[in-house]
Amino acid sequence: MVISNKSNRRHFIKKAALAVGSALLLGGSLLPASVMAELGEPEKEELKFGFIKLTDMAPLAIAYEKGYFEDEGLYVTLEAQANWKVLLDGVIDGQLDGAHMLAGQPLAATIGFGTKAHIVTPLSMDLNGNVITVSNEIWEKMKAHVPMGEDGKPVHPIKADYLKPVVEEYKKEGKPFNMGMVFPVSTHNYELRYWLAAGGIHPGYYAPAKGDITGQIDADALLSVTPPPQMPATLEAGTIYGYCVGEPWNQQAVFKGIGVPVITDYEIWKDNPEKVFGMTKEFTETYPNTTVRVVKAMLRAAKWLDENDNANRMEAVKILSKSQYVGADADVIANSMTGTFEYEKGDKREVPDFNVFFRYFATYPYYSDAVWYLSQMRRWGQIAEPKSDDWYMETAKSVYRPDIYQKAAEALIEEGTLSADEFPDFATETGFRAPQSEFIDEVTFDGTKPNEYLEKFSIGLKGEEVIK
Picture 1 (cartoon, rainbow, N blue to C red):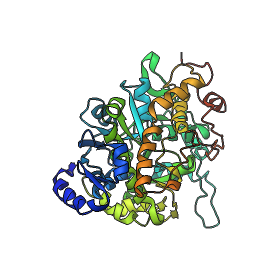
Picture 2: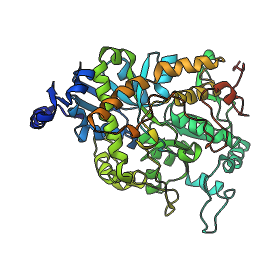
Picture 3: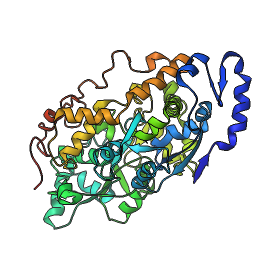
């Protein structure tokens, strides 16, 4: 389904005209004159953005529904896409002006893993939000190894160590242990691989130089692609025994009684970056004012989603439950979007940061986030040859664009719409987070030293290693 705000143009211009006394009205945008002089009018007003039906597309839906795009003089159409490849192709060939993307997609496209195109991201859309779910049958086998608390409930985080005996049992019986993820360069793929490897289960290598892009070389668990909305049905059919996906497709498994979410990505890597907003480099260069205005609108949406301790989340749930957005029952979406998460039926726990859209500088496109994704591409063979630390830095900086982000943030600050303390200190920000150690295996990641980081893993490529 296609959603467009073009029909609201007349209402917006009338609304803006009422406030013209203290501001300058130009081209359908209402901004203080000082900011308008800096930013300028949008070069392209009518835009089409793509998304996948997941709750973390929320900043796009809210920017649309709350009129934030219109406030920037932008008349936006939102269009759900069939899968991540179709979405990426749409951005590359110009059918879409931008899209809700997997964090790994702009990086992979730019380095030529898959379709080659220079995609950039001026905005990170959220932190956390994914879960690993297993079938009821696998969960029953895992439970024999999972420690239980005094309340009789599993002690979290649930490690892949408890899955390993089950995988070994299947291997002995000659049964492939199949699991699903949403795309080869998705966060879900890397998180599932990270969790499995931390428990001693090899998730397999890619060998693009040999023409092998299955990612199953030497694998104990065989990972393959399933589109997010199809995950529960594929699990129920027995085609896969578990999967990693975003919401609401894990809570859907609970509601249907077909599977058990065992671990959130917050528990695998606390406050990990998840989706980004992607555009071609050409678009951002041809339409720089438009690009900054898009980021402004989405920053306002992200703030709205998190402000007042998530007070707006139930309203967001109602919006996302509409068929043109996520199209799942509001109860299913609310189970994670409102700060709780249900594992086994009846085992609902407080997870206030399951979805983070703005706090913790969630929207800032950190170079170190890009480096982490690139390190995982190298670890699993998608980057087939060794690369220098400088290569990682240069690639990250060619894709992640905090310079565009900063222009949008400073315009919002000057307007008084947002405050400076809601953003990093741009005068001192390097784009690299402090070393992060809150991973499930307690391995510390320093984004300035990717090759040193890779050396810390017992499973995965490092140094000069290649798949022959």
